[in-house]
Length: 233
Image 1 (cartoon, rainbow, N blue to C red):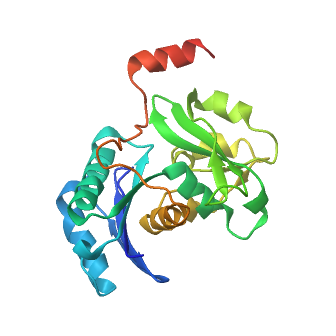
Image 2 (image 1 turned 135 degrees about the vertical axis):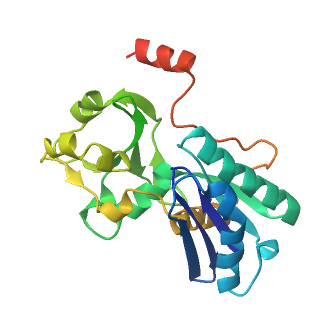
């Protein structure tokens, strides 16, 4: 299945083309350039595999978590292309992408992975990925939540595996928990190839999204929901 994948969940991002075991990927080295570079980058990666974006049969995009502007660019682009091409559309969770990247063949493969994003103001937006044989990707994602960093760290049991973009931001604080297992640094950030692989597995299981109804899952909820969430903890 000719697949184009987009990750615009963070200030920088990437796109990829995947087909029959081959993949090509481009990253945006300058933060905030998704909108200006994404169309050309998609054409470039598809061209590396010998086809054009109009040939794509599956459009995969990170639906969240992420910032408002960045996610909106990626999701809108994927929806428009899927609509124009008559291609299947799948929005995937970056938590699931990071879980697959972080597990690998090593000891983390059969254990839950706690994944955190920097949500600003000393908070993290975090969820736990749990191995699940009944999931097309091998993982299910628990309900994410907004936590202060100390609260999240205190909730982690000794020996827990952790990953996600927040690890780079809060390196000093996380270093105070040497009992935690830290995933390889290269796995902390979702890649477009990882996004495409998740979508391909989910598409093979018959899943898809409607371009008219797919919406981003933002990194931080509205202030009203955020206050409700905090008051309940």
